Amino acid sequence: MILVIGATAHFGRQTVETLADAGRQVRALSRDPERAGLPEGVEVARGDLTDPSTLGPALHGVTELLLVLPYGLDARPLLERARQAGVRHVVFLSSGAVVDSADRQPDVIAAYHAQVEREIRATGLGWTFLRLFFPAINSLAWAMQLRGGNVVSGPYASAAASVVHERDVAEAAAAVLGSPEHAGRVYELTGPQSLTQIEQVEALGLALGRELRFEEVADQAVRQQLSQFMDADFVRALLDLMAATVGKPAALNDSIERLTGHPARPYAQWAEDHLADFR
Image (cartoon, rainbow, N blue to C red; front, side, top):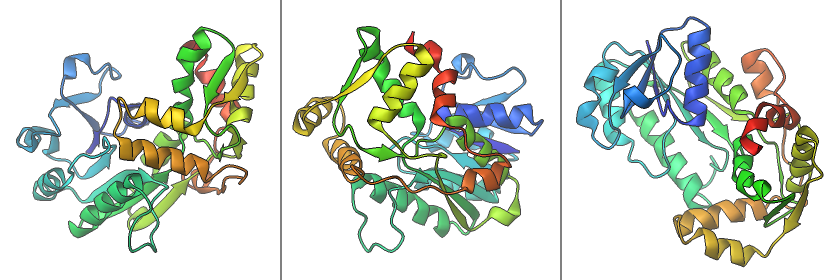
């Protein structure tokens, strides 16, 4: 039995669907099972990550665990419950910002994910880490702007990323769950191409049949705006990561193809798959 934690978020939901389509035994954790909206036939267990005492029924009989955690959550109580319940293998969707050789991680995003990785290792359970930098779903943040025009405004127009389709992440996670040969391994997941934000907006425009353009705005203004409703250290880390990629093509690898058996989906495919989100 596989338990997916974070099952109603993008990556968790897609993984649940992928596992269910393959006929795998999968259970999804949700605070509100009646509103989870997961595929028919998927077992949905009630539980709250902020109250580990509620997780017992969800963990019963589970041997594999996929963790898609909200930033900042203390994972230790959950991991201890999983160990006690007999879970044997934990797959964690981590961050590409983690630097293995660093005595101190470069920012709060890397530090949080590195901490969870250490805590998973400390359980003595089998583990696999899937590290992801810039998922394609970040582009959904542009939808509101594009409802009022054809311009996307943001910092760092030339910031480059190898954006990854969430379906590829889900299929990679499904491939390592239940496969002992992946235990103790770290996979960095990338898309098939390095694209600047300008190029992403152009590709999205082609899919929508609209002439879209990216208009760069001052970094400081964006930092101040985002910090009004997001953790300031998180905003700083996110924008610093973007700034570091300006003028530098993103690194590419074949991890997704090796895990799933097919090449990573291009950003143009992601745009086609999400047309409804921009209309």
